[in-house]
Image (cartoon, rainbow, N blue to C red):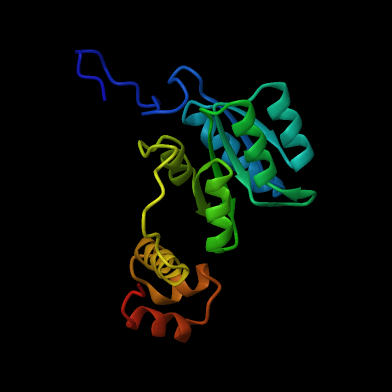
Length: 193
């Protein structure tokens, strides 16, 4: 961070929107989750607006495109990716994180291509979301010459969730909506190419 004798701003983003602009739009149709997350993000210094549908989210983006957005993938009236796409068109430096209850790699790739900075599987907590929004990873990483196969991406995702669950097979299987024995077989195999 800063090393000029002044105290570093704990809320400053490393790249993307300016540190002064902490506007955040959260779109989720689970009202209890939406309220909890909004309060948690406000305590982290964000100026939070909320919406519970694609239509409300689009209106909020049109009215004032936020610096940050946390958007549920599946909403009652459509797909949260539409909001991400509109946000990136209106404010290219915005950072959007997609939340998904579905561990679908193809959907995650689509989310990133449409402008999402990151995606997180539900249930994601406020610390994970804040970390993803303030990550120093560039918004537009270059496409690799030899991208990973879909099997490898799936394996990597399973490994990531397994590590986040402290290598607990039962918890990992629950979070991935997968049978425990199926997960054990996958974990016992070598990584696909």
